[in-house]
Image (cartoon, rainbow, N blue to C red; front, side):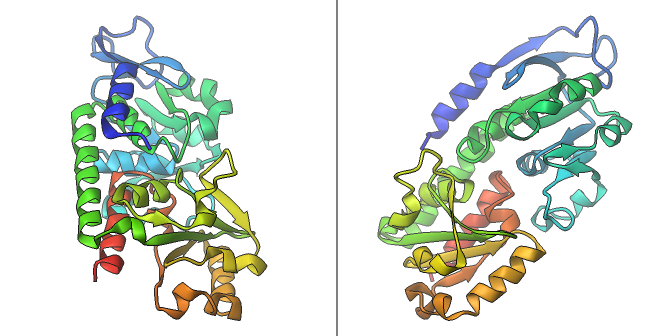
Length: 314
């Protein structure tokens, strides 16, 4: 797991200092004479406004990031199965305009908002990059999950909030250690993280967002969820018939959308689920998908810490 210092150094190295304005600014950038900064990111280098005012974000982590840093995006793409905007971020999200879904951003809707900065992800929107950068300066992070801290810092630089992003991330990591201390011998607790999807069940490993947060607290993981034999240690899939594999000392589980909620209800009402040792001990806790899975930012991470503190320190 990467340390905060490593993440910060890597991202600061990517973000080059303030430069003069571009001689040929892209549509939606600040007017001629306005200050810009050159950002190095997953798709190359981009001149962005020093203080962007109309930001469009194309991944769920970037909604969390912008709001955490005090910026309300004018537009955002939503998760496919999501019903509205994340509730944990408060009322400010209600002013955001929807600009498609993560894998298929609505380019016309984005252009209509006249953004001066677009934040996206190479993992999700690489094929749209050229069209997006023709609308406004566009900065992409590389991957999701394991790089959430580096992504947060890079997006913070692009938003002109570099130091605030560093401070928030440091505050999160400090609190994660404090929660681990409150739990006492956290490594002895073998945690299972389960997500019900519309067509499958997933167990989440140490390189997923929630897995990293659990790891930052110092909690142990079940052998099944270490994913030792997989290159991608974010998650693995299983069928309802193999639900016994999700057992642990404690289970945290959630569902992605209404169809997944129906599957969750069916599985958790069945004998296989009820026979799990954690369930029989009253140690299986439903949690919110939008914080444990799709939030992928410091505010969502703080909500996970709230859940861990609530259920593991009583």
